[in-house]
Length: 79
Image 1 (cartoon, rainbow, N blue to C red):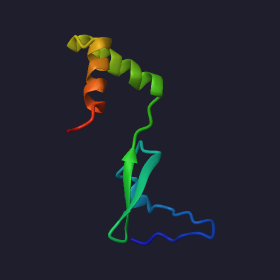
Image 2: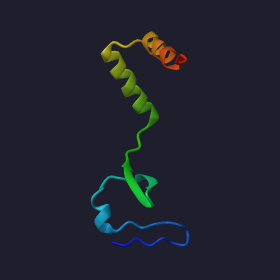
Image 3: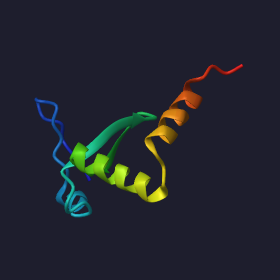
Image 4: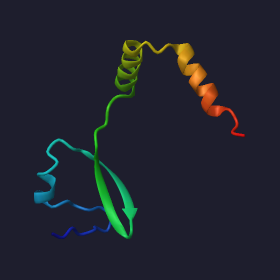
């Protein structure tokens, strides 16, 4: 299948390709070995994601102090 680049550097994806990603609006675009790679991305509200992370931490019994200690550990200089 071919996709043509427009004068505004836009590509239109062929219908057959788009059918494989029915609810995808955004793609992460990268280049590897001179190939354009499109990865579907699901955009979520930052607060929604943060709430889920906090909920999971609470369920696991991880406290704010545990997180602070982990950050201190990760930031300490290697010898």
